Image 1 (spheres, rainbow, N blue to C red):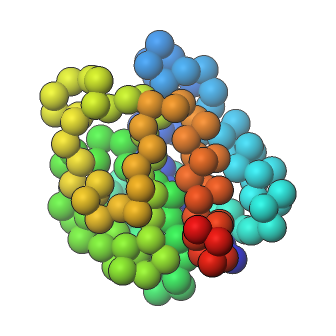
Image 2: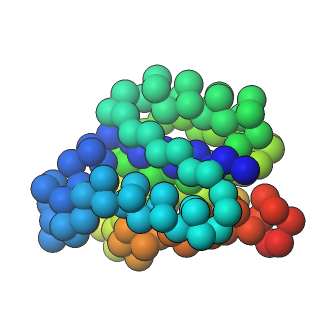
Image 3: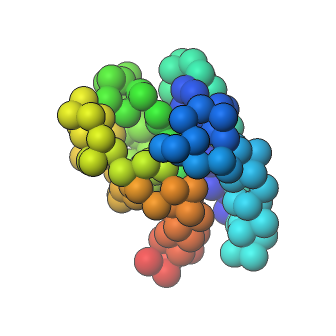
Length: 148
């Protein structure tokens, strides 16, 4: 089974952008941790990041067509993109997706407290730092293997 991990705008700046909010771990660090964890779980993980909304939409379409579950940190698109929501709706109807946020978006600025994606996500993980990705990977692996 393949699980697709998508990261949206600015997540390529992890480790340097606002480390007081997002920590010092880089996206490469996260991807290495996920690859190691996926191996232990016996699943394949593929990580992708883009600062372009259309790339994320195309990748969501690919996941829907292939039947892959998705772990997504949509970054700022969480609060603005109906188009990404529409693309992920197909994933939600299939293998499902988990929305991940490194910071606790509910304890931040009011505009960050609304997500267009949360209502159709299988689950949302926020505020647990980059560990949220590992938890989401665990969940997707178990759910799509019939164990959760």
